[in-house]
Amino acid sequence: EILSVLHCMGAFVSDKEKDSYLLRAGDTTSTMGLLLSGSAIVIQEDVWGHRNIMAQILPGQTFAEPFAASNGTALNISVVVTKDCSHRILGVCPSACEHHTHLIQNLISVLAKKLLLFNEKITHMSKRTTKEKLLSYLSAEAQRQGSLSFDIPYDRQQLADYLCVERAAMSAELSRLQKQGLL
Image (cartoon, rainbow, N blue to C red; front, side, top):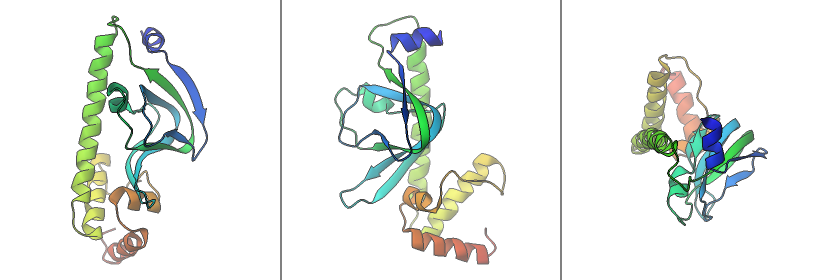
């Protein structure tokens, strides 16, 4: 069934190197992507170069689904490779083939999960201080991973970008939290 769906969607594989763009803000797309290997991040940047990381994309995850389904909508995000990757480009199925309904159900499920992740990010960002944002994020990660000892998918700069805080202020707050025994 997978091969039939991939053929129906006109899928093909593309490889990209670290720091290259899979998609750029301002462009339009009628396709979505499926990351096969490597990693990427979904970012929003303002005209001054301030970066907001919206999400991380890992193998098996899709990206650009809402834009592929919204004919001609300009991207307000960019997708940047963080580790050399291979990804499959998937077009929208033009016919109501036998797999079309199943594919739509799966896409709705993926979009719902992404909506929940963005809701969680808004929860973290709505906190007033850097300390509250950090504790909100770290608490959610501890709960998700079921342990007080866990790894996060971001380096310091990426975490600062994800939480929309200054890296220096965040690093100072992390040090204070460590001294207080909270980390």
